[in-house]
Image (cartoon, rainbow, N blue to C red):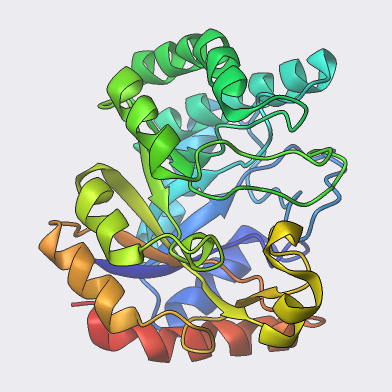
Length: 303
C-alpha cells in the first residue's frame, strides 16, 4: 500500500509545490485533480485543475517524470462530474473532458481514472441504470483503447449543486454495484470511500467482503453522525444536517476494521486521503494540518 492525498484542496497551488510538500510530509502518492480549467464547478473541492488535460504527449511524460523524480507515485487522475446529467449539453461537455483525462492518463503512464457514474434525480435508480448502459459503453471502450481503467466512487452525491441538480451518483449501493460489475467488471472497478456507507447504514465490513476484489483505489475519509441533527431532521433528510465529513480518526469509522477487511480482501493499492473537513479549511496551513493528522492516524495500518 501507498499513503497519499487527493490534490483538490490546493486549487491555487501549483502541482510541483503540492508534490514537494506531500513528499516532505511523508506521503508516497498523489491522486491529481483534473477538472477543466474553466469548469466553474460550485461544489466544495471541485474545479481544481492541477494538470491541463490538453497538454501534449511530451508535456504529460515530463510531468510524470518530474513526480517520479520526487519519489511520488500517481495513484490516479481524478475528475468527478455527472455523466448522466439531465442537461444534454452539460453531459456532453463533461464526457468530452473525461475522455481527455483518460488520454492524459495514458500519456502519463497512469493506469486509472477516478470518476462518478452519475445520475438524474428525477428518475429512479433502475431508469438511471438504463441510461448508464447507453452512455457508458463508449467511454469504457475509449478507456480500454488507451490502456486505462475507470474507478467509480461509491458516493451518492445527494447535494443540490449546479452540477448535481438534486441529483445523485447511482453507484452507491450493493444493489447497483452488482450490475456495474456484471456489465463492465474488468474495465470498471470501485474507488472505495467507507465514509459514504456510515450514514447510509450499510455494513462496511460486509461491503468490503463482497466488493473488495473489485476495489481499484481507496479514499480515506471519515464521517461523524451528528445525532442532534439526526434527531431534528430524521433519516428522510438523506443525511443533510447530520452527516459531517471528518478527517480520518475524527469520525465514526473504525479504521482498524476497515484495513483488516481490505487486507483480507487482498487489497494492496493506494490509500488516498480525501479532505472535506470544514474544521481544517480556510488556509493552506489548516488544510495541511488536516492531512498531517490523517497521515498519523492511518500510517500504522499501511506497510
